[in-house]
Length: 308
Image: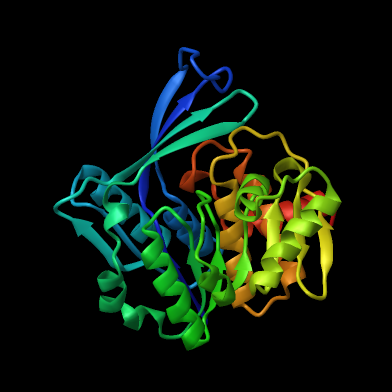
């Protein structure tokens, strides 16, 4: 069975429900505070596993209470955790998330042990890349590790899916190793230094990344859907209209679902459509990993939505 490998972050999310996202200098009172498993890497691994993927993860958490909880949660969801190290010298990473009544959010990341996910750890667990056909990467771990893994996978014929979040300046070399990049509008703008205002600017920014060597660009557009561009296809995919409660992990659900379907040799078109339905379910639920649906739930939702 084809395998998806995730190299990325593991965080404990601290989620504050608020009336609205505070502006600079504003103090507001939170309604509730909850803890939940998160981190873009872990979220994407859980999404793939819940949707039936054969997924393993290389990551790093602290050898503390949060780290042990998150490790056991990943294992419970069906993720192969052989490549996850519990670090005695750094605390588990954490994310502080404000979620508004409209389902909007903003997030502050404290990297913790994620910042110690080193190239030497990758080399120690190289055997986990055997039989993998897709590798998911994000930018909540050291960029040197991301670039090493991207090149390593490229040389082994493993297709790299990069979620460039949080957006930072990347080396020119890495683009050549990326099969598929999945930014949101803000990340696409930061990566290309182009303002995204309409379809024409979206095409221009996507073309910028394709010209650097990326094979496919999928930009997630929130409630507006997503946009695919490669050298043969330019296509917009509308969102599924639902009542959004919490958009946390919607993008991670989309990417995990996308990788799972692609690893099953589904077309990129079919994979994007399925991922759109999966992420639509996620935004109707609170939290990150707990909001991600399983395969049966997505299949049922698709049938109901289409009136089958």
